Image (tube, rainbow, N blue to C red; front, side):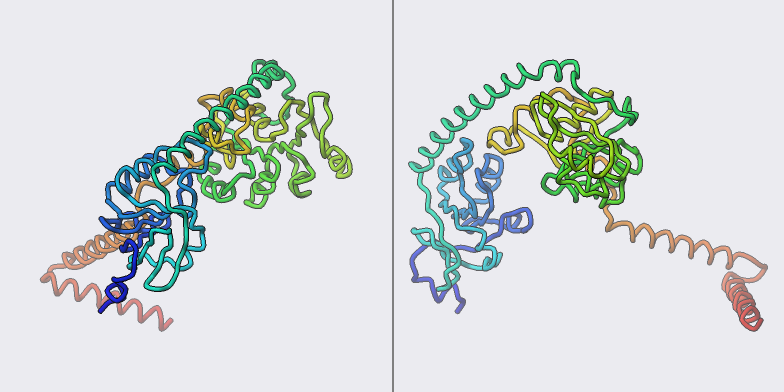
Length: 395
């Protein structure tokens, strides 16, 4: 008798647990009656639909199905499909979760393997989701009204910069028509930079390091052409690499970190603006000086981040990227362009085929050379080769 059968009399929904995350393979194996375990805050419609197509009995979320940041439809879709929802069980569940193992999920939101307690979360119902959706929708409206109010203020104060580049410093680095790589200290930017190696090797772009992004360039073996940011957070090696150093400054010209630049004895320019974001200033700099293409590494921005109120989703960031327009490419997109289409798993096969063809060619030539039969010619050829080898060794 299996463990599942021994505890069949215990209360709760019973099914196989599946780790349905990018790192797990559970989503491909998910089937009717299973318990899907996900890590999907503010789960969207697309992911919810994928889960629904497999007809799981329940979905257990490490995070909140709705955080209140955005009015997402995913939770309503799941519960309308008759799927039990439990959220906020916490990341500790990954320590004990076994993909493919039979489990029990109680009405109170407790997950068990047999009698071993694995996790506890909050059980959701339709009424709770409806209230959360309404609250998130009002929150988004209020946040967007404030955001675009600030955007209007930024346009009012920085229209000369955005329109005509007023205040953008000159630089000795030639940029017109060239590709530019702007590296910022965002999530996974070091890994992105590593994957951009083929692009950097081929395009030889102007390298602009923003804040600690300059250190990442140096650590990866590159020399930044331009550094934009507060020097107090940048290593001396990067600052003394020969790069043009540009300090973000207030509209009145006051720049933080000027004292360190003076102590190091290196020159620097200021970039006065209403934003202190080194990335925004670097993008405007590259745009004003005529960059042909600008690759943004470490500081991507999309509308979802604006809706969610992420710290990097500021009015200046949105307007800067709108100003640069079609010339701006996210690093991930550039990595995809430089990814080889041929699967690495087939490389060894092509090599093996080449060796086989070469060997067959040698055998054919050896066998057909001479007046005797094919086998006799082949034997004579290899005997000659062996004799030559012995003579060489003897010498």
